[in-house]
Amino acid sequence: MTHQERTSNIRKEINQVYKQLKRSYPIFNYQNTLGLIIFLLSICIIAVVSYCWYKGYINTWLMIVVNAFFMGVLHELEHDLIHWLYFKSNRVMHHFMLLSVWLLRPLTVNPWIRRTLHLHHHKYSGTLHDVEERSVTNGEKWTLKRLLTTADVVLGGLLRLGVMYKDMDKEVKAGRLKLDISNRLKKIMFLSIVPLTIVSHIILYLFFGNLLLDLLHKFFGTNLVFPAYLKDILVHLNFLIYTILLPNLVRQFSLHFITSNMHYFGDVEDGNVIEQTQVLTSWWTFPFQFFCFFFGWTHSIHHFVVNETFYVRHIGRKKAQNILKKYGVRFNDLGTFKRANRFHQTP
Ligand SMILES: [Zn+2]
Ligand SMILES: [Zn+2]
Picture (tube, helix red, strand yellow):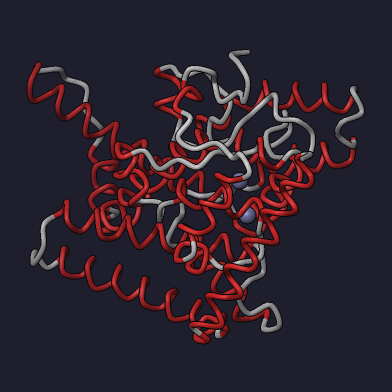
């Protein structure tokens, strides 16, 4: 069987699973309502938990874990919104939801720009110009630098920009990428982090910089500390840093760690969806999966059947995974960590 035939069979069989699921549970047909309920419920839980932490009713770690989990749910909602799965004909509602999930996950790129980057990812997953995945370290050798820049789309992104631009020029020369698409991608990659993403990252750099200098001062008697006015700003931002930015840092590291290692890069056969991803369910990835709504378990399924909501994909995952396995999609290929995410062998 060719890879096209296998892909087409996978699509047919998974769509059948979803149809059957919706026949058994007709509630899944109320897609907009369900999306809105999940959206409101997640935001309410984040608000109540943050308030309880502020009042001292619950401890910091519990608040960060709960908030990070529900921000992971909001990330799935954003991804569904990017594919126009909620309120397609009610644009005000649609864009209101998109704006809200960005404000609550301000370390991520602008979702309206991400839509272009993400649809490009679906078309060209694993190529040198799959900028969405490359922006989160996909395809890089595993080093301390990759570990430190996994969550960071600003400094990490700037460090990667030169190589990515060069690779895109190469692709244009080789005729694999149109010049106007390349120019557009280059421009929007930078615009996508202006201004919310950059500002949120800078606040975190200051927070950790201050923490580090204070620790050095306390334990080694160093004299270098932040000036009083900067410390003052950080005190004012304390609630935002703890309830929004730190949970998002945990969530973003987890998501980027999982996604950048379950997508293949660099030697994926043109248009071969089977080679684009693997299913990642290894036990030790569980803590990371928890903070990105089990992305590694289900994202492969999404590469075959794009227009389905995350909760239906999650509920139907066992049957869908069996179908993927039957047609040769890889599972738990941990060698990818040694091969810098190449499908075949180390570059
Ligand atoms: Zn998608
Ligand atoms: Zn993908």
